[in-house]
Image (cartoon, rainbow, N blue to C red; front, side, top):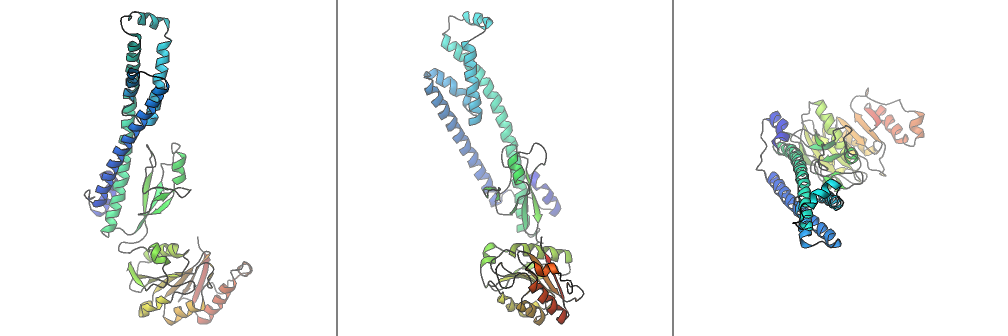
Length: 397
């Protein structure tokens, strides 16, 4: 675990707390799974071997000799060992002349016991080789699991300490010819920090790699928000007419940080079925509120905090306000001295600002009008020119 946590430990001068509840819970769950899996494998192997022995009318001694090499193997290895045993028996049953002369010297020993001893010795040697391979596989799997879990937990602990903001996970493969098809299909998948990764069919595959034994996949943790700023929960985005509540604070003078925060929240709210608004005040306070299909009236509860603020909100699909600003949006922008008002829907991002030079006014094209999305855009351009404010619209990625 410490290997996975090393970079973050060094970056923030912290140490992974191995006594944290989530780590102890993971270790206990992992130990239970190992014992449970080992017990299940043993039961499966013995049951399968007994079934094969009964089908061949083996004596108790023959059955015991068949089972002994199987102890400690997984079902796949046991199947290979059984095949080896049957091949070995066929070899003993049809020996070459040299072996036949060797066997003729042992007439004093029961033919069955002699054959079983040779069979058992060969099967045990093969079994030892298989167990050694299995042990290496378990050791590699254990190291990869602990490395990825250590990295995951150090990010969690750093977020809880306020050293790192909200992160999302990106699945990364080794990107070479040895990568299996299942891992290639997971490459680039993104999940929220506490959510499971899902495959192309939508099936959950786990919080972090590995996907299978000898898997070399890792997770890249993409930092989305600065420390001290919370994300919006799905419940909060889907609950209508909520009063504005504080998500956290940002540096209002850091333009790059503000752009990243706005981009993140717009991605979250753009597909919601009701209007969601994010308000960043002139002092860096970040609020979230919701409305209904066509309005987000609770934003007015912020009063003077709207002065000089940057506001972004979504226009839901099939609402009355798609593809540009509504009259109420423009009134809100003008009457509350908002510095920048943005809107987003399934096609476009649009913005009102206080700089009339930063504008699309006069740039409407025939294509804008012909594509069915241009009329409202054209009317807002006219209104912006009349009011002496900036207005732009572009297709979002």
